[in-house]
Length: 67
Image 1 (tube, rainbow, N blue to C red):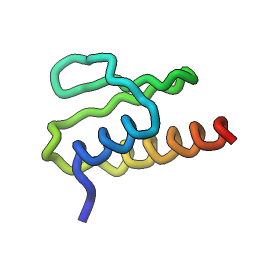
Image 2: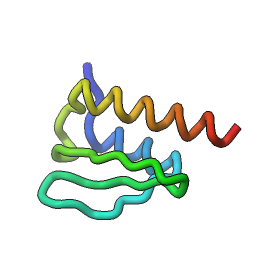
Image 3: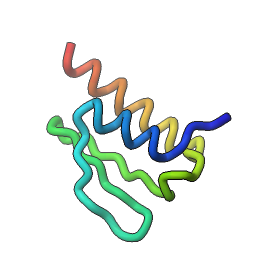
Image 4: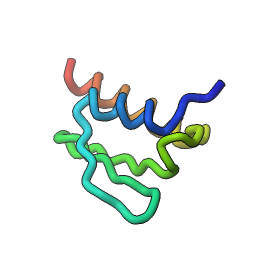
């Protein structure tokens, strides 16, 4: 079962991303290192595969930069 948008947002926030607003169901999350990811969808919706992939890459990049 795919995870929900609210779970993805929680993971991004734990990694240090900050919600900088957006329009409609789109939210822009920015990390202090400059990494940006746009999350679309309502909190109860499933995360689309492309967004899951973008988030995974962004989180890996952040972890790599921290080490």
